[in-house]
Length: 109
Picture 1: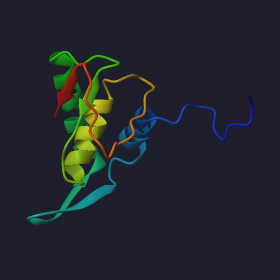
Picture 2: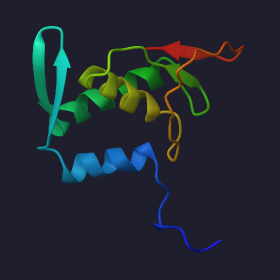
Picture 3: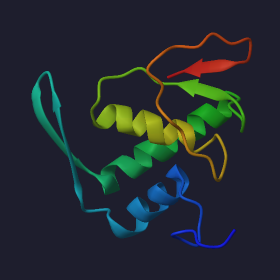
Picture 4: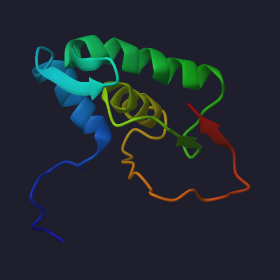
């Protein structure tokens, strides 16, 4: 059906692509126990890519589930982004407020 608002799939992969190319100098400001923490997307992208590579090396494949458990700060954004890189080239992830038990493999970062 025609009439979509955009001509590409809205996914986390596309968001990360834009961050890498267009917003490297934009700040990510979060609060931690030790105070305000500032970093840029340009500094986060290499860490996101390293995490994605590490998950791939331990066997995370498209279709696998990756759970993250972290405070809502820049570290969680990196975990969320890095783990989603391996899920699928066009996937998007939705945080869940409940834990679900499953017989499938689950990786915890």
